[in-house]
Image (tube, rainbow, N blue to C red; front, side, top):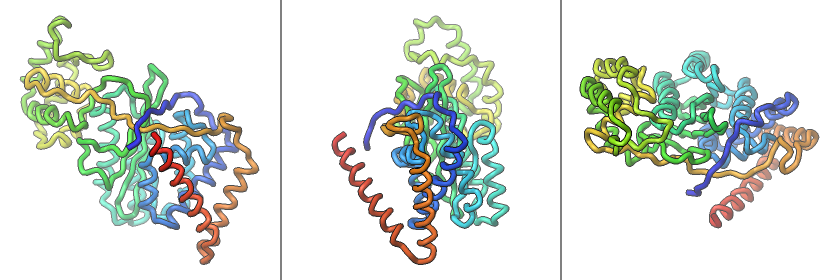
Length: 371
């Protein structure tokens, strides 16, 4: 696994309409070509690959170092694939801000409209839990504001979502591949991309297993949690030896989570994932249980940052050169022509694209071996 960092700043969101329209055409043509050659499941795998996803954003003309690459690329793909999705067996739900909240409803609408043989409830659960893990179980200071859930007619899924740290102005992207998620609560990510921020609370790390068990145990003892939190709130900082936490994660006040404690006691979840899935269990509740578990049972949670990947490409901001409209249009025409010919049995252009992909993979592997 190649390691590194990638800064994804706030600036660079603006995308000219002429460029976005071309992103819609080229991006959807690329996805259609992949489905034509490998099937819709391959698209999910590539969405979960941060190198490929970043390269796609750059190929269609966005600048590599902007958080807008994620939001604009996903928006362009969703728009371009909308009239083709049923033919491709590939469906995109969600988006940025308020659109992300409509994901469960969109999943249901797709399933009903096209009579898809999928378990709608499981897909909706995967969408909700992937967002909840990255907002509550991984407390790295990045608030999720963009969530795109892609799934196939066979029920496989992938997630590309992004969070923003408003204080620093940097973004972080999270990739998920459903076929590789055995559990939502231990190392579930395909990739997490961004700048390391130091000590965080990572309840889905392997090292946090004991803390998760202790948290689940405490979920059935709200009075004990409430008592410990009140004691912690009244102690001077020097007495909190085991609670050396970053400023972003203060000791929560018991009053803020009493409702969540009562709800958990009523539900009595049997697993940590079930506890995390309960409505009302958010960052403050997760943090409170982790703190009490550490104090009472000495089960420290992981503070390691899950960021793992790096990128380096150019794009629409003029680096390494400005987007050339004529060349862009020629690329779209070439790819669309290849797709038309492939459907009539002429595979010559698609074979050429395969050879180009092979050369790209050789270059990527060479770079990886040197890193």
